[in-house]
Length: 563
Image 1 (cartoon, one colour):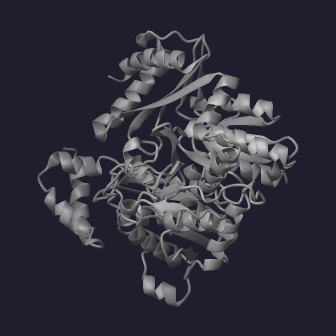
Image 2 (cartoon, one colour; image 1 turned 30 degrees about the vertical axis):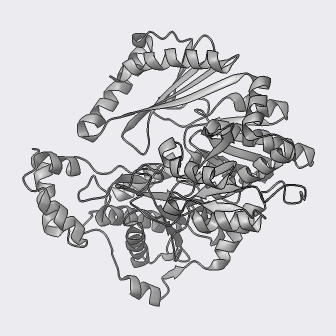
Image 3 (cartoon, helix red, strand yellow; image 1 turned 135 degrees about the horizontal axis):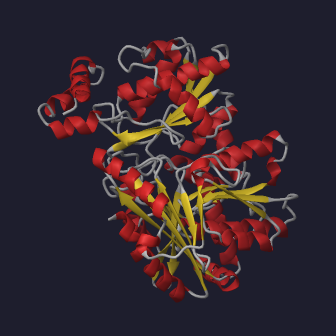
């Protein structure tokens, strides 16, 4: 084993005493070279997605020392850019294991550096953190969450003064400050109770929560419609995360009266006992909700992920429940929002829908019908939030109509700068009730759109590469594809866009997008938050059967690249 790793392990055994769980873990792996190596072969990397990793001991784990190190680096960045006079940071956390503990320790680091902290007194969603940053005039924000990852993960998202996740330039600068911090000697930890007493740390009040909910409700396009049946049966699950209070409060205040909860997934629980992978993109996480929907006779199931920035839905379709993809829900919302804005004369001049390059291009067809322009950005909602900020700087924020990404993230309105499952849940219920009042189910409306614009099939495949060897293999595969293209998989391509050095006005990113002669596209990129390579396939055909046959052929060929 590498001598540097042996030295790091010994140092942590000596100094990692702030959390007794770490001491116990370090002791338990003594003599296990593979276990030691896995925990210390690298530092958890800070990037535009912040920090995310498995909870535990070591430099390659989420723990109080990695959290302290990043917090100290962020504090140094804030002090250098804003000074300490009037500087403040907003903090929130989700239901994950140690999220509250990490958020308090991070708050103490900021306070120890002379930076005021506003922290929610209980777990709150990511969009509520984005809102608090702007509402309270903070210089930055921190959300303790690993989003939809399994229970052994936690993470640390960083927001700028506009309430947007930091993008490339800021993330790089913050990272340079973090790199200078020694996790044991260089972090200014402090006393939570003392900081509460001297008000360097202050709880965020109910007025901020109410302001957030009011901004969400203001996005409704049917608030004045009296003929809608708001007693429709809806099932909701927060997947043991943060969504329960804000989502139920919003829907109730919007007049929805028949909402059933999935009891096993109602309360916050970082172990996620009934959905080990708490991701509304997958059916396993939705099974309990579907059971409840059958029991309640509901036509709509809504599920939000643990930090309540993503939402998935299932709708009754014949005798079963159909899970809509993030693209399908996004397309439906685009059509619904454009239709009602035009009908109610609420469409702004030069309206804009913003999406990511891996999100369905069917949006372009829908938007064109309603006279709306579409902007394509790199993967990550932070880039959508950044564009909203640019619009605001020009006094043109009203042009923003809707933003979404295929990974179940949606935002109507500019009151936050991140995807928001609270507003998305409300908009979905409104859309469901609106079309129901006109005798259409969501599957019927989707079929109508496919008949009009052609059938679009978008699929995502993730290939996992755990540990040090996996990390190196990911890099080798991307290098090979970049050099040889898709020819080794027997796929003929017409063109390729390599975003490595930045193109189309977008920043540099490790992304390859191939266009095939028939217009199908294949995008390949490493995940920014997980040890995975992701492949996004978009197939357009005259009907569903033809699209599925072509997608099957392409996906079987693509798999050869990842063996």
